[in-house]
Amino acid sequence: MLAKTKKIWLDGKLVDWDDAKVHVLTHTLHYGLGVFEGIRCYSTHDGKSAVFRLKEHVDRLFESAHIGLIEIPFSREAIFNAILETLRVNGLKEGYIRPLVFIGDGEMGLFIREYPVRVSIACWPWGPYLGEDGVNNGIRAKVSSYTRHHGNVMMTKAKICGNYVNSIFAKKEAIAAGYDEAILLDPEGYVAEASGENIFMAKKGVLKTVPTTSILKGITRDAIMTIARDKGIPVQEERISRDELYIADEVFLSGTAAEITPVREVDDRTVGEGKPGPICKTIQSTFYSIVQGREEQYKHWLAYV
Ligand code: PMP
Image (cartoon, rainbow, N blue to C red; front, side, top):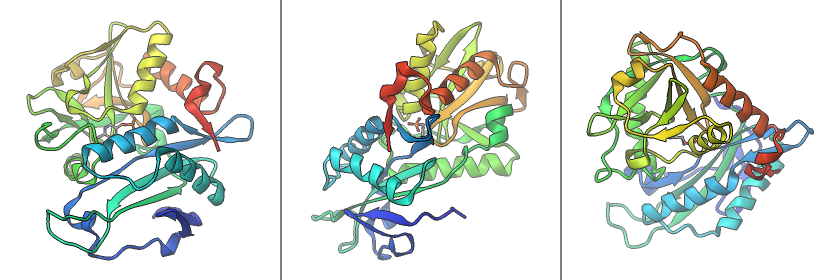
């Protein structure tokens, strides 16, 4: 169960957590057209709290809506400020923030003339999505029998609610088979991404990640590429085959919820030495230092609450 906070921002007003309810004929509930974001805020070393890359998340929410042909009835600035306000009113210094743009009730069927577009923003305390142990010691992943969306089937650049049915199937399959996470291949059979994370591998000191063709353009992915380049680690965006992961020195996943989680095994093959490798550890520690406000160079990534 989620740890409840006090208030949820709904269509411009702060309502009590238990009162943030919708009608069962809410259009998004039936057909999956809605868009969302996953954002984190962290306690900073000076006793304050800051949201990591809030502007980029708000921009991606609006881009997702644009791809989904949904017009958000608030400005980017209003949503940016509403997220900070929701954190303040709940007194949440560290946790997860979930803005959701959805189509309300009033009409049914796939073609509706009027879109009653609604927006909610909830936040709650949430530890690393793949577990503290996963972050520290690595997880076991399985290449999924499910394929990641082709760009002509679903739009992978958008965090569209319905896209995540594919992720849920892959995740359930992986867990049922005794693994922690699923890695999905693209329709051509190359590595795409995990069910809710982007993927990186390191080989002979070079960091590699897949091009953004069939994946979500992760904000953590972008942060990792920037940190690596700033540290002089070469970074390549290149197609990766599943067996390249087996013989990589390091594999790790990145995402707002999962942060930076090492992968110690893929399809029962030990990756590298079967524990977090040096590139992953360096980037992880810099990432935590950044979100705690300790790195002047990356202060522009933080929006203080
Ligand atoms: N891919 C998918 C499918 C995701 O759901 C996420 C999480 N938003 C990511 C990648 C990672 O993106 P980000 O780093 O922006 O959270």
